[in-house]
Image (cartoon, rainbow, N blue to C red; front, side, top):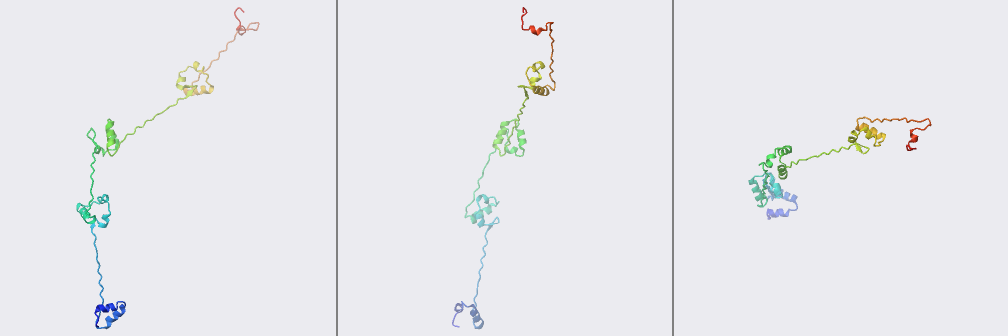
Length: 219
């Protein structure tokens, strides 16, 4: 009874059951009061994200979120220690040709239309291709056809087509070559050969012209 409640609680601090019994059976009750304090911290949200998120976001990415100037100002002040992101404005000067038309004029056209528009001025087309975002190069395809003529006896069909039969048969072509020549170069028309047989006189002595061919007239 001579103790304060604080002393009673301290005395019984290791035995809550005995303290409870004291409180229930003695005139004076020394109840302990437990106070729980809950502190709730509400983080600032800017554009739906907390300062912790914005603190690690790069300037390049940050500027893509479409925040208002006021939101950006708050973000810089509250989340980034006043450090602002600077924007760099790049101005691109587009080419304009001597006809007064530049890149933008052709943006709605297909490359075929651009090339057609410039078909009479290759220099302007080249300038367009070198200065605008889109290049409309023209591709020229050259096709070379090589024809190999048939050779017979070292000559082409064109040569054999105008050669007379008399001359043709003097070239000593084989039967196979002649057959190919007639078929391929002369429309199947063949050259015919004529054999002339001359019968020479023979006298009663059994000697004919041939016997005397090697003699002089005196002989």
